[in-house]
Image (tube, rainbow, N blue to C red; front, top):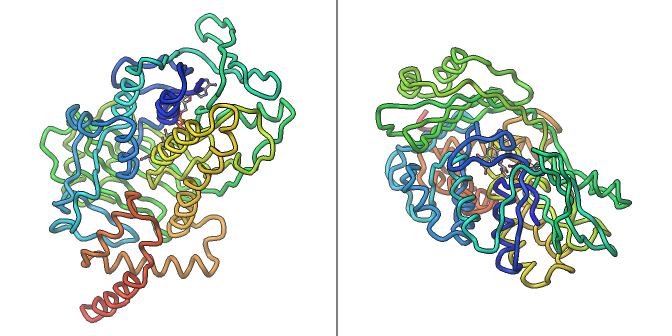
Length: 441
Ligand SMILES: Cc1cc2nc3c(=O)[nH]c(=O)nc-3n(C[C@H](O)[C@H](O)[C@H](O)COP(=O)(O)OP(=O)(O)OC[C@H]3O[C@@H](n4cnc5c(N)ncnc54)[C@H](O)[C@@H]3O)c2cc1C
């Protein structure tokens, strides 16, 4: 039994379907047929990109998914042509000519969040042993003898409640998932929460463009000296999403004129002009993201047998780095393996511990990156100052160094981990490039 049919819930269902005879996904929303926004996933209105590393995991679960997304109109970012991306980090634009040395290592498909979710949902619905029940609220597990026995659900249309028998229940209800409260109500400890403030704001407008766009992605990061940034991605059906990003509580415009002014301010001039000529679709969407949260289920001494949690309900990461769906995919991969190895009774501890090992590097990377852009929660301590100074130099040199540009893109897309940025070879390259850069000035 899976609560929530967003990305984590769908991937959890796919993972469980290889071990269990029957899997039911319970979703509160009435799910759209095909591609569509829905109230339970309001983040779908905003800039979304699935990292290359996340797409790799999704391909393991759903072979041919990338090709299907491309067939449905999602553009691909061609890593043989770096001019298709404009990335400005810490005030430095990355190299924009030529190709990556290993372009096939990155598979970047630019599907909107609703398209991605609908394709994954259809793949899950097509599994013979998975049933998706929408329009139902998951109320909570029913326990018998210390193990989950059923999930209590309520039909949102009629209010009728019933119990669906279950050996395993996976809470994929997102950041607001109910498991901590449910544990407390049933005599268990709540998981400890690691949190840190982000105070992020998104303001987004979707557009339809008539001309073919050469740049498929433009990201301008906020910095310690500028509390705003911006992101633009070309999606399917000639649509382009543009998001203004505010950090440290910075207020963003709420109207289209303000969004376009923000585009002019952040983007290269021709992209700002392109948005002014484009047709807006719908209204400006806003979203606040107060803090990143990691609930440490892996540290709990006692949990009911068969009760699991996945995705944002475990760890909600600052969305600016686009890691949330990849984190969900990595957790689903762990679920797939542990449930096959241990069965329903014993899966909990093994799953939470193994999932925490996948989450930890994402969490640490997220936090470290935040120190480079967000002046909240201890950013001024000396290790962060050293990291920030190194990152600034790295980006400055990457603006003319192909190797550093490629290193950065691989880490950004989750193909390599953060330490790849600070190997002795890369540190030496940054130092040499900094000296060369100084001579250029
Ligand atoms: C503004 C923003 C931008 C983001 N950008 C990116 C990005 O670029 N790349 C990326 O990888 N990630 C991004 N993320 C994160 C990403 O959206 C999530 O990590 C991803 O959706 C996985 O979340 P989830 O499935 O765990 O939870 P959610 O997506 O929050 O879904 C929870 C689901 O559970 C349902 N539900 C909740 N309670 C119940 C209940 N009691 N009963 C039944 N159903 C219930 C909800 O209706 C919903 O469908 C972004 C997030 C935000 C907020």
